[in-house]
Length: 100
Image (cartoon, rainbow, N blue to C red; front, side):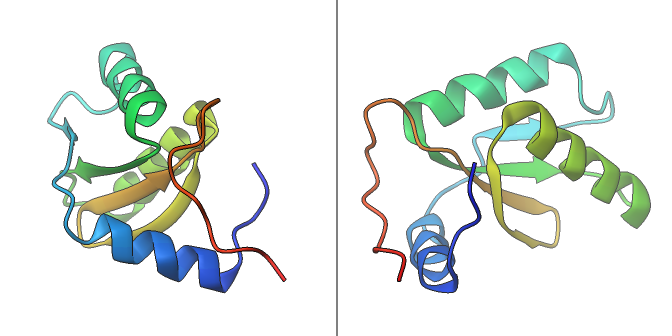
């Protein structure tokens, strides 16, 4: 996926603001089941929040990097334990501002 422009990123942050996390990562970490949920949610919604409950900063970062790599999604932002991901689906639902 190509990089988002600052304007597009800001737009997605605004859309994500009212969303609730659809996937919660628990003590088992990033399992195949969790990855499948993320895939399903991205395919359905394009823009999702994932709650990564890890107290260890480095472990949390590693999990986030793995999610982004495995899903092919773009990391929009991370606030605390919440990761916001975006990946356009075949029938694009979210109309991004044009890149200039």
